[in-house]
Image (tube, rainbow, N blue to C red; front, side, top):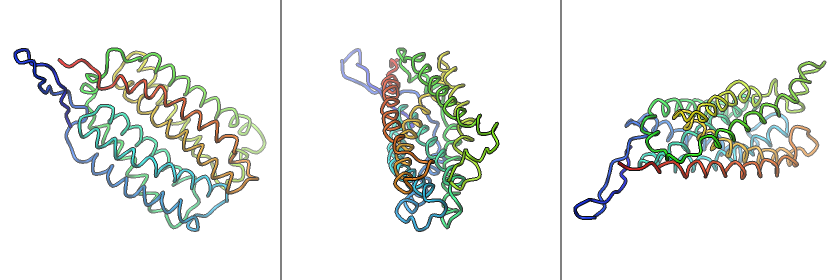
Length: 295
């Protein structure tokens, strides 16, 4: 997975190819796993969206899942495009590949743990396993030195880190605001409302895994550490997809049960706008990838 840039030959003035550093070491495992993920996730999400009779549980939960399934289906072509781009030598492709895998993993957990047991259970497990191991094997294959060499000296590391830290702090506050009063009150189950769930895997994932990771990566980005820049960029891609996903699942959930307090039409424009707002630093970031001077 290499890439060739161009420079002028001193003698002839003609452009000649110059090899750029690898961003992913050669190997077939991440490619195969991501390919299988596309097939299994498409089946899991497709049947969840288009055959709602297979789903069980509260109406609002079924609606939320169908909305999530729709955005998963949209994310899969993004995954395919990013894999192809990375294979062709793009460092930007790697960032989007990692971010899309992170998004798909996040949703796979919800398919398995925020969805009452149904006949698609094995498909959900396959989707979760392939998401996790695609991400693990891709990270193991990533060449950080090669990626770092592909970053522009003008990369706005500290502004990007500030966006990521702000996102982590605001998200943490948003989740703790309902959690703390509920767990200190007489009935913590108010946190799951009428969803029929035993707990909320969104809170679990965000507070235990994703927000701490985003915070650590943002701090490393502030210090211009290569791993921090890679993970922060990927997670911003992930949060763009996730914001679009929340807007969609809230719409589907509200349509399924307009009386439920677990889905709100008022959240739809908020998260749709958030997705657009977060896309701005993502584009800014990606403009400084694959822009390093060629020597």
